[in-house]
Image (cartoon, rainbow, N blue to C red):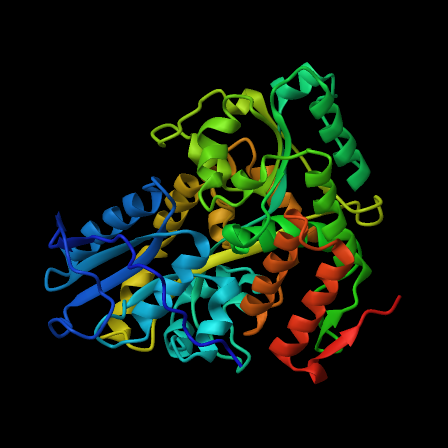
Length: 463
């Protein structure tokens, strides 16, 4: 059973960007939470999306598409609802909005990991009929189609991007520490030894950062913990047995790796890890200023350094290099990556489902999809976009991260996953803070998972 929607501690900081007949003005509004206020305007399409800190890439794209769309459809108004929030808060605030017909957006930008939970809670509409008549659906990779398909076999969104993860390292820090470049770690111990070398060198850089703990939300689970777990041979969910895995040695080993980072002072301070906005500091100052040696993170982060971005850093292409995240002991396939993805969905309380899908079609036109991939620095899910020369050449990292998709692992696309993910973050945090050792934290996680999914839906890992 999916968890009920959680109420945020404070309303999101939002403004509406109203775009009508090709013109745009900013309109301040009262908080959308609650059921008071005027009735919905059926000629208005509300579009909710996450604004990542000070970044405006999504708004830029939505402005461009909205102005073109409303010029062709002058009776339609597009209201953009940027939700500036940490990752977990974004999902919560979306659920709060979608819960009421009066406040619901018509189109929502949704992470695939939360999709089935929102479907189970009754927040989203299926779009099977609309997709059946939409030719570009066949261009989308099957794995991405599956990520937006419910357990009932119905389609609940249009995937637009995917991503992979690896180790980003600062060449200047490596040179100062006497480490090799290119760097090709073959095991976790190689990664830890590089971090120890940085710690013991004259550089003032923190050695290694792995997103960890509750403040980092899903980044901690996916960018951090699961990049370790899936390199051990263990897994969260047994697809064949259709049960959640407990008693996992790989789970405990992953927590032990994390504990080593803190016990040996191989990472940033605990207070920095507990800062929900630490990623902005990493991208805007710590990496550009050579104050961090190694970062385990996603394929998209160089968008922060693009021309015109708040933290523009043209030198990054010469300063930053990439390495695959190795498996625990170098066992096959030698490296590990997690893939995810985002897409456009239609809430159950959308005022006009067909109008909402029409706007999604505009967002997903091939030209818009090419431009969006380049602006957002993401990996496309579409074959026609991937064949475009502009996409193939937009970034020096796109080929590296696209090739990682061949062996990518995916999170369990199940309604219970968000709650399981929260339990992972709790296990990480008690190990980070020294409240519990890895074995005790893993045992507490096992008990939480059994409570979340039911004891009949878990099984002990074979040792």
